[in-house]
Length: 199
Image 1: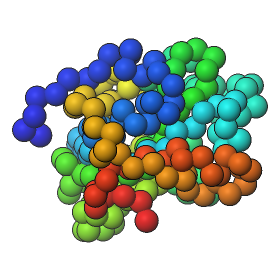
Image 2: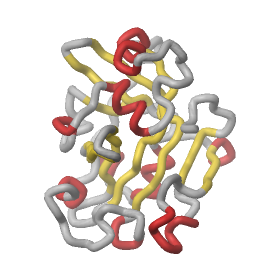
Image 3: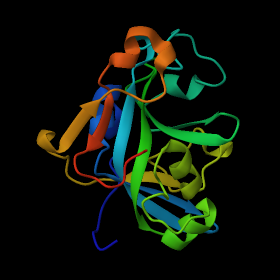
Image 4: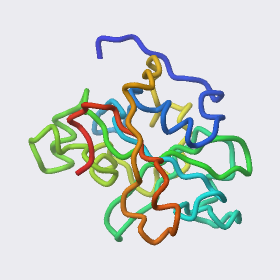
């Protein structure tokens, strides 16, 4: 990366999940491992708003072993498996006992493309991080990534200026038809015009 960027401090994450999902757009996520370092620009997110949201894992308001990380401070990785195959990366939001988060759905790859291609088994840069399962595989994430501190040195965000509102598109979230009225909330956010969005 040609830019010299800094990690935001904890305060960046201590906002509600809707705000965080939008603030994350355009920021860079970095994942470091013994295999190498990879990074990408966040192009698509979804907000999950805890007890206000029937689509959220934490809608009951009671922590479980799966959701415990969401009940701590914002700025930690909430990583879980779907379909018994794919991992999804979420960023915890807000303060303690407010279990909100932002799901990262897609990235525009920047660094470590060869490692991403190896992990994903494709040479198409537009497919490397297209969707939450794909980007987690490209970043080398697994169940041991759950709980990583995003203010740490393994998985973290690099700050860039917030995008203006006219560059952010809001729409319905994906694959939550079970969630009643929550399926119609416009809580999916994308960078307008990006070619690096989920299918």
